[in-house]
Amino acid sequence: MLEKNKTDYPDSKKVLYEIFNHNWERDFLVDSKNEKFLTYKDFLKNVFSIIENISNKGIRKTDIICLLMDNSLETLQ
Image 1 (tube, rainbow, N blue to C red):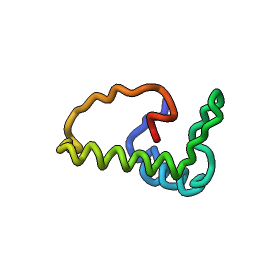
Image 2: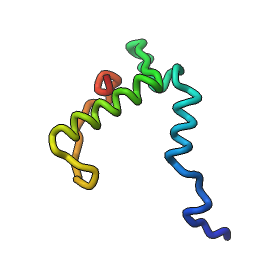
Image 3: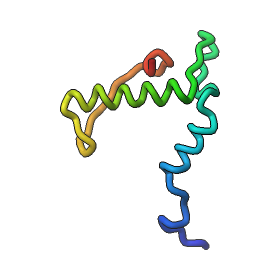
């Protein structure tokens, strides 16, 4: 059996950057029922917006929080 250690896996930040950079204008999430789409670009912009809103409330990187959200595309917009 092969032993896995941290050096066996690619840097996750680099991998995510490459995926988003390569697919910037492509659909990331699709709501086929309502025919709505969210691109990689729009998804990332929304993530940064959520991070900014959370930070403005005084919540920091090491804080533990719970988010209760609907499972819908509108939640991310």
